[in-house]
Amino acid sequence: MPEQTSELKTYSGNCHCGAFKFNIQIPELKSFIECNCNTCFKNGYKWIFTDISHFNIVRGDGILKKYDFGAGSMLHEFCPTCGTNVLGLPHGKNQGADVGINARTLMDVDLWALEGKPYDGTATEPAYKPQEFAGPLPPTVIENSTTFTGSCHCGNVTLAVKAKPLPSKGQTLPKIRGPGSPFAEHTEYVQECNCSICMRNGTILFYPLRPQVSILDPGNSLKAYTMGRKFQQHKFCSVCGVSIHIDKQGLPEEAAKWPDTMQSLWLEILPVNLRILDGVNWDQIVVKRSCKAEEIEPKYAVG
Image 1: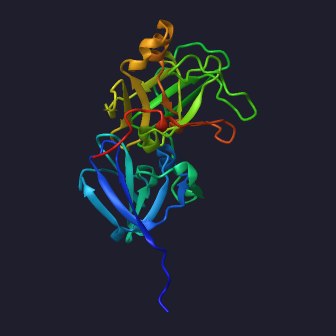
Image 2 (image 1 turned 120 degrees about the vertical axis):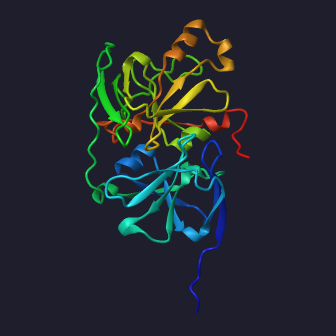
Image 3 (image 1 turned 90 degrees about the vertical axis):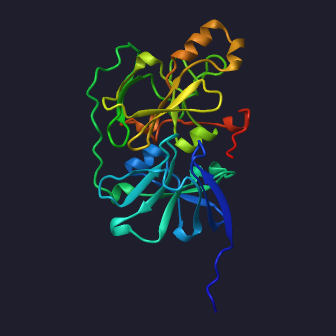
């Protein structure tokens, strides 16, 4: 008897700016693979793999930028305009007919409702050596602070952050000061947001003030992506595609109702992707999930 196969469904996906669109045919999506190697963790990849014959490019063939490193087991491809990490093509000793898709790029999929299956990529790749931060440390003085350093994956962008204590399990989450700002006074606030850009970037953000952060980018590798209401820039490394931070360029319309002190404070916040920092105890910190996708108007759509 012929082998029984699961019925295939068609899923559509795209980078955030929509320059690259595709669809895939796979069984109903119920899980994804979470690899803990350094590049997968920094990008927050949620992998699904399928035969390349079930992957169809709708728009943007050839526009994705390629990033290769280390043992060269997979060629990572991301959008050079918005920084969305879209796919991976196994090559070298792992070359075959499969394509890896970052499930974060799929439309109308609730990733938080799916099962994440861990994969120990640190056991198979050469040990990753972080790029050391060689610049001046943030000068601000903060009680009980910890200075973290980190980088994008290729090391072209490095940074140091003098952070207030990160929220730990068993603690009461910090009280948020004012509307439109997840800034907390004595403890950093850490959140994962399901809005269209944060979900695609895989960022886990926390919200230091500008004097708490020092960034080195000697090769001008940082690229800014602005979308929607255009009051902030999402910055990523143009070489490896890792999201670094958000730079606020102005106030949203609703800020007109905020007190002047909150408007000034909001502009001083420099959200940083916690994933790129070394030495974070991920087993102990509390990451708040924020369902911003339901609040944002207009709703995200790609033509």
